[in-house]
Every structure is written in structure tokens, then in C-alpha cells.
Image (cartoon, rainbow, N blue to C red):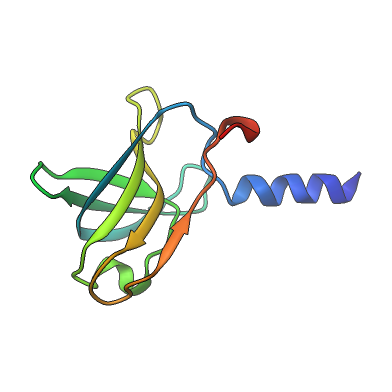
Length: 116
């Protein structure tokens, strides 16, 4: 039973809050990357994401980017868009497509309790 509780807590600490929110995928550049206190008391990161051809979006995530997002290249960001969530634009998947750190990819599980 203790092992089950430990595995559950580990899984929760490596995931986003489960959500049916709309997932938006966009490619663009990252600016103003900064560490902030997370919504669970752990580390969270915020940045201004500027998708090609649109206005900037303030994004929050628990994904730590190499070189603190200062690679200067193109990033593919999948984020949850939902005005009812505490973090209105939470990135759950980030990939570096060009520039320093090309090939980096990290994601968080935001699927509501196993549904994909």
C-alpha cells in the first residue's frame, strides 16, 4: 500500500492537472523565460511565446528548457487553453525545432485520468 501511494505521488508530481481543455499547437519564439513559484509549491516557469503571425501569449509550464529558453531558435509548444484553469495557458509539450538545443523534447501528462 505504501508503494502504491509513493507511485501515485510520483505520477502526480510529473504531470499537469488533468484536463479536457483545448490543446493548441503553435510554432514560434520564446522570450522573457523566468522561474516562478509553481501552483503546487514547486518550480514553474513562465515565458512570452510569440507564434508565427500572431500576438504573444504568456505561457506557464513545469518544463525546464535547456539554456533557459535563450537558444534563439524555433519552438513547437502545445498548450492548454482554458480561461477557467488557474494557469490559463499551460504548456504540456515543448520541442526545440532549431537553434541551440535542437532536438530537445519534453512533455507532461495532462490527460484526464488515463484518457488520451
